[in-house]
Image (tube, rainbow, N blue to C red; front, side, top):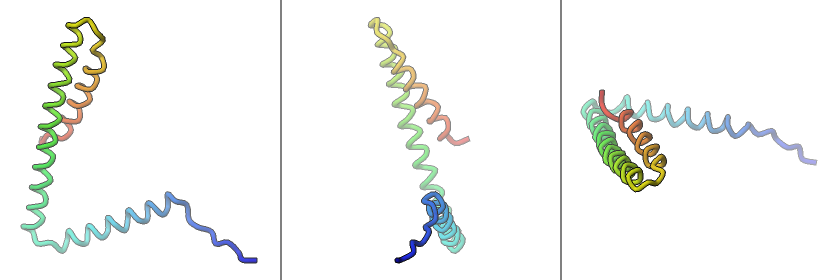
Length: 96
């Protein structure tokens, strides 16, 4: 009979893979010219700001929809909860 080989658990494989990807990314980042790193950082900041603006608009619209529901005599809690959630994520993405 053939003896089965023990395989490492899936979480261990995932951690090892993430560590390898992070190490490769760090190596690539360290070999990049400084201006390339700056361009990447600027693009990432711009995406965060764009996402924060989008979340701000959605939070505003959800809040207004909640007020409309409240004035109509219906339960506005779903709209208010989504507005609060969107506002929290917007605040996390805003530059400090």
